[in-house]
Length: 231
Picture 1 (tube, rainbow, N blue to C red):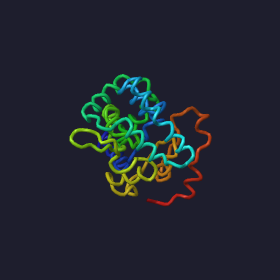
Picture 2: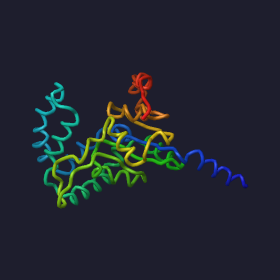
Picture 3: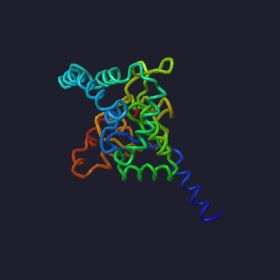
Picture 4: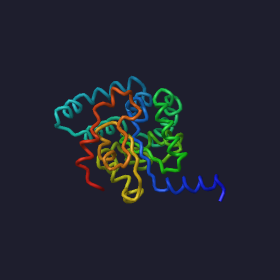
């Protein structure tokens, strides 16, 4: 067997069961993408008028009278009720083209490319809507698991289909696609509380890996790993 063939076989064997999962907002991007997308898609006047409606729900969430998931549902209902799915997809495509360089972390892009070259199965797993992130996943050349929006007769209903894809729902969604995560060498990258369950399930967990060093100091991973139960 030639040296190049042996190396190829080794890489295929080594990485055949590697699943590399990247959170999107704040991990691969410099900041949240969904709110800027809504501003871009609807324009400043409509955006400001509707984001003002989020003030009371946001205050209720801060007082723990509304969960983050419930707040997300209010945001989606406020902006995306009776919106044409085709229109939203077109806006997402253009948003990706226009804001790619402003949003994406170069170190994150290199990491995704490296995982792909290694032969790992690579996916984004995000709480942001799949409809909005699909162009980004396509450009990265990876799969996508995100929050799904309910569509009827070609229009968004303003409701989430299933659950907001964060916390334990990231594990549930991944396993619905890939089966038991125990069969993989799971690698994961995340940056917020919504990624804890994913990171604790991973053999290789990367907390705020692409952030400046001062933002990575207080990693919760050691404490979480100590209390982790295998999924």
